[in-house]
Image (cartoon, rainbow, N blue to C red; front, side):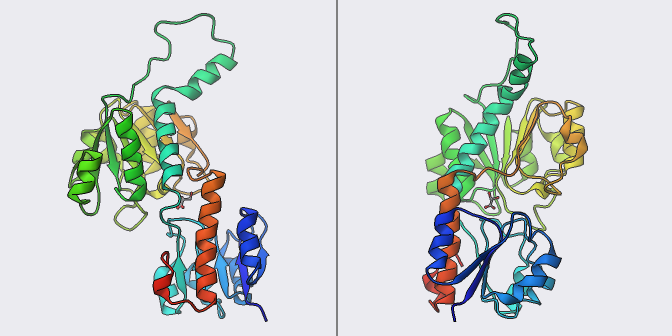
Length: 321
Ligand code: DGY
């Protein structure tokens, strides 16, 4: 009998078709598996699950997963999965590194430009009928050229951002758990800061590309926000809880920083009410990797891990385990 795979939400069809060549595949309705209860009810039916980052694959869920061999997350981040519990139950975990770096980096640059040059305020102004004539003092923003970009998290996505920011004429400084190689630093012309606080002090733009861990939760708190220059712009496309949202909202309302763009939120999909009306704050619904190509690549990488594991391939032959 064919093994059974649960894809928790509709994803790019070619990925489902690929899995269907090997297994019986069920695809959940949008949002159906965003609770532990729903996952627990169904998970024992499956040998593999391809969950979204919104699906809590907790210890309690995994305790019901009597047939499960692999969780292949449809994301590079895997803070929705209890890794220790998976390991204890001998369930393999895969993620999707590499394939979304370009898409996320392009989106990050887009957010930087959009906030610094006030795209959305400008559109609102225009649509409200306020554009009467060319204004020499209207919508004065900040150029990227010659500015300093601070990057927290210099993995694949951070480096892809740095490469693009260099092309825009920016100076790059970064903080990371460990220093990247001399070669990478030279290629990106990036200077290392061992303290994220000192980094924050020296930036015109601060962008976050670190995973969510105990160390990075609320890394950007009231103190760090106070250290940022008044004109500086914060961008977060990593995970919401890396930023203390209440403190950010306060900083924006008090104009102690210049602006922010957030693609991720502390209690996703909720958005802190004080951020919703904060000045110069652009909010997007966790979509940095949302290009067709990237979402197909993400799905294929996850599907390949499932195909490998369920067909008995050695772990060493599955690069994203
Ligand atoms: C990821 O893969 O972790 C992203 O947040 C999804 O876009």
